[in-house]
Image (cartoon, rainbow, N blue to C red; front, top):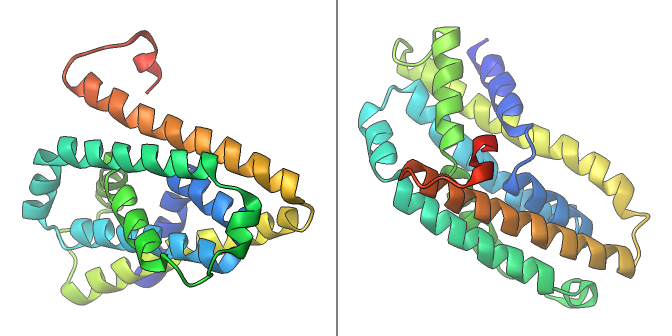
Length: 213
């Protein structure tokens, strides 16, 4: 039962389309489902880590994340800028001819880190766990089952998303993939901008449209 609850939590937390979702969709469209699932594995791993922190009640880790969130987010924002630039400049024919086993570890680790830099993730997990009465009162076995279920649920969402993306991929030609790269690059870069604006807001530096963040 606890494992099924974890699946539901992981699935629900993964559904909102943020920078990771954009990267996943772009990978699935331009490079194929298998490489996109590396992104899914990274996102699910990060969800597993945050889920475990909340499930086991690791307050020391929670406090460390909170105190170091600003530099972590700044690094995450820089990575998003870099990924956005690379995506915008990439060409479909170069992607299709590139070795399919290259940079998989880099893709996985960068996805884990980018997901971990989102403070809404840990806040969301802590809020859900508090609402359901989970977390500090769980036995180690139950906490483990819940964390593994969160990983499974998060990965399940990306599998579901990949099915629908694959339907569109069959209709895309090289020009369509070119537009996918351009639009994805812009959206990923904008996510990086939002990260930096949220850091400015933390220090009390407000810009007019920060009220929508």
